[in-house]
Image (cartoon, rainbow, N blue to C red):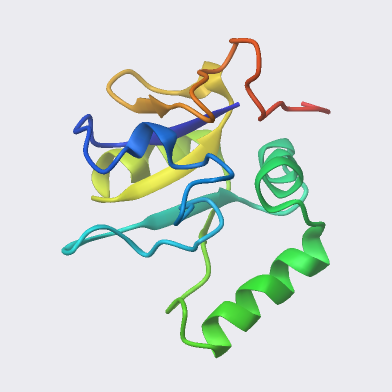
Length: 138
């Protein structure tokens, strides 16, 4: 399981964005912009997908009903303007990450297309000891 980003530019510690102690985690939508003019566009697989379940368990630490409530509350409080964009395949996620500035997606590391940057979690890449996102049931 990987976190993929379209740009290869390294700024603002993007490689460490999902560390639990990071002040503005992107994965939990506590950060809306990479830079002042590049918004974070969070892409997430549709409900019941293995990728979505892994993200809900490891990043959000929620089940689907709590995840929906989490986003409703964020939008209601004007902390976010919209929920994550739902994608129905890793191919769609690859295409969107490649074409939308600021897009980030969670997908199986074997599905990451060439040219897409895989981000580290807590300093680890997929396959390394200590990497937190793992697919089950795929």
